[in-house]
Structures are given as structure tokens and as C-alpha cells.
Amino acid sequence: MNTNKNLTIIIPTYNMQEYLQKCLSSLIVKKGLETLEVLVVNDGSKDNSSIIAHEFEAKYPGVFRVIDKENGNYGSCINRGLKEATGKYVKVLDADDSFDTANFEYFLNQLGNIDVDLVISNFVKVDAEGNKDIARNLHIQPNKKDEFSKIAHKSCIQGLWMHEIAYRRQMLLDMDYQQTEGISFTDVQWGLKPMARVKSYYFIDKIIYLYLVGRNGQTIDKATYFKKIPHEFLCTKGMLEFYAKVHNDSSYNAKLLHAKLTGRIIALYKRVLIDYSDVNNQAMKDFDDALHTLSPDIYCELGKKQLSAPLLPFSYIKLWRKNPQSKMLQTVLALYRKMHHIE
Image 1 (tube, rainbow, N blue to C red):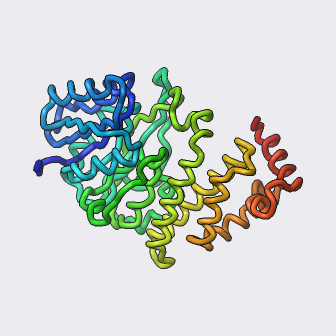
Image 2: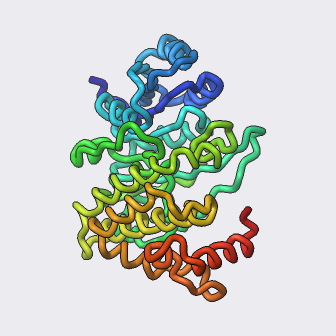
Image 3: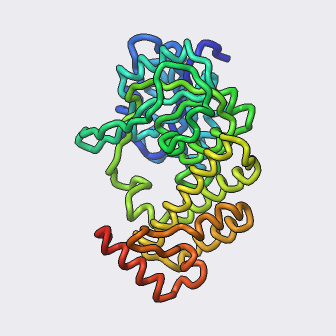
């Protein structure tokens, strides 16, 4: 087993021949490449993804390694990668995204001098033409090891994206971290479950991750997303079940999980009810029943959530639970769409 790897990057890959070359090329740093391990987990691709990945494996032996497996969706790729990873830290990179190579070189070489549970860095969204957004301000001090309890209450930390996160591998092994397999959207679990164990952090104030948006067929594409809404609720239910097991009101970690989970559920409910006008969504009804059983506190908190105070001071989730077909609910949702120009 390798013992000199600062970082393992797991790249879940399914039919990504159009993007994989750029993705893998962005990881070729001039200094410190020998401390990097890249696991391309090919999830039963039917295109040339595996061939492209094997070319990098042949050119950079000991750095790139291809794991060809049967299709099991995103979570199965993460789980398989973690079983074979050897790096001190683990970071996930989607095959249609890439890294800023220069900043990544700095990041990679810094990891050799850091000993924490969580390493945070920046990301930006990038469109197909290469236009970049501005990185968000995390409002935390860089280049300093510190206690996670000091920042866990911050909304920017509670909203960390998977693109901003690298974990100590041993911490993931100690908690037997696994993602739900067979469904989409489980990347969000990467930003929630391990947070229950994080005690220390280090922030590298560099843009590392370049997140491609606007690709046809992307899971965040509105048409694609609508078909997979049940996956969203199954994924969130997995996080809810985890939260129910580790819940502790006195723990800053549990409070962070509570905030992250509550925010996600509210966003899901609003998306289904407002963006898709789907008041009869069965997956949402099933999830809400599970929520009532697994976490009565979050269930009650959502029941009090108002759509848009003070203009629309209505507890819309409570209205939906009482009667999805009610005229009051339909009127409130219609007014909200009109106010926010949602078609």
C-alpha cells in the first residue's frame, strides 16, 4: 500500500468521454504529483471514458488508477473509491468538472503540512464558454488549524458545497462512511454525514474546484431533475436516518447537521410545490411521513415555515399537509410565483 499520498481524488465517471480528458489533465501538477492518487471509478460507461482513463493510468503510473465496475450510480463509486483509497485526505471531483491546476498544486503540497479532519477550499461555477462566477466569501481565517466548533454555527459553513471539502480519510474509515447507492444526488451526503465527526479544520483560500454548469443532461438540468425527484427524497431520507442516530442537542456537530438538513428539506419542498406545482407528489408525501417519525423537531419546524413573510405570512407546508388541494394553498403558491416571476 502507498504511504506517501497526501491526497486521494475519487472521480465517479459515467459516459463522460467529452469531459474526462480536461478533468484529468487539470490534475497534472509540476510539483508534488507523486503525493497524489487519482481513482477514476468507471461506473459501467458505454462510451470511451474507460479508454481515456486508462491512457492516463499508463502515462502516470502510481498516480492514476482506473476502477472499472458495473453501474451502481454515484454513491457506489464513492464507496468503492474509499475502499481502495490510500491518501491522507480524500476529495471528490466529478468527471465533467476540473481543478484550477496552479491553485491545486499549492493545495496538494500544503496538505503534507496539515493535520486536521476537514480541509476547506474555494470553488467557482464555470459555464461552457469558460466564464467564471466569483467565489463566495466563507468569512473564516485562512492558513490556520483551528477547532471546528468555532465556525460550525456560521451559515456559510452550514452551507458548504461538496466542491469545497476534503476529509481526513481515517476519519471516514472510523465512522464507516458510506453513501446511498443506486440513486442520483448523493453528492450532498458528502457534505453532511462526515460533519458529525469533524473536530478540526484548515482553510486554504484558493479556488481549487471549477464546477461546470449548464451541461445538457446534467442532474441539475430542470427537465432531468424533474424525473429524478424521487431520488432527491430517497437521498435526503438517508441523511435524515443518519441524523436521527447521531442527534444530540448539546453537540455543535448535531446543530450543524440540523441546520443543513432543515435547509435542504425546505428547498426541496419549495422546488416541488413552487417550481413544479406538484402538490400531489407521492415521493414528497412519503418523505414527509418518514420525517414525522424520524425527526419530529424538524417536522414541526417546517410546519411553521412561512413562504415569504411579511407579504405572504402563510405556513405553506402546514397548508399542504392539511389539504394539498385547498384553494388557500393554490392561491398562496400562485402569488409567490407571480411575485418572483416563476413560470
